[in-house]
Image (cartoon, rainbow, N blue to C red; front, side, top):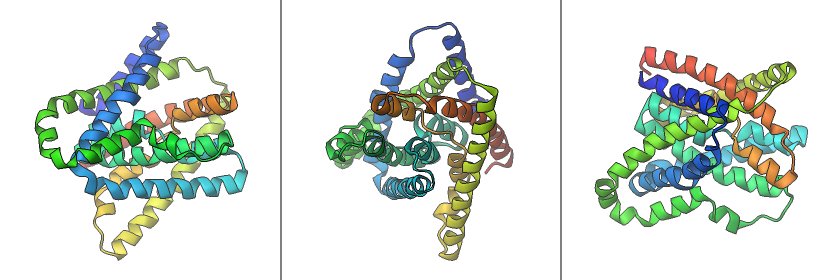
Length: 287
């Protein structure tokens, strides 16, 4: 039953969207400015050593994949859709429900790294403006990361006195994240040609990212590292995620267009079906 909860929240969002209740903007602000930062602060103050390498690896991987795609096509939006995935609104709720707290911590670290790189690319390749370290440092994930680092000396107090806040934040992250996706999907109209084209692009990305995961897994086996082996179900889950909804915000802000909306909508809907099937398999095999 717990595995189905994110999809129930998604259905709630779709129903809210159909009724045209104006809660998406407020819910997005609460999620990105308050809820996810609180979860980042909690985890960084208690588990920085476990998360630091994931943040760094995510940033390096995203930059490498973006550079490869951009070299092939010279289209920043397409390249961004290929490497900047919806880890925050979709990946975190699913990982927490399906694989537990430890997996969610891993995904949270990946979210921090992807947010830093995604917003950096947005400024440099879409608006063509000079790199601004101030903008990166002022983004909610980075602010939360810095606050979490400052609170490491009092981590034991955070764990005791902030536990209830953390529990509520975890629920809100799952509920609001999936609800917002549901509202957003209910508002998007698509053509049949879009569905076919972007389903193919989604499948292509899964193949490429899964290949990368298998290569890393092989390297881990050769070097006798258990980390990749332990996180293999989670790594494959990340491969199934659609592009980040934040790409639409970046494109609208910097280019004044919304060409990524159809692609992100199609890939999100397809990914929900694929992830649901993946969740059933993982749950049945108890991976």
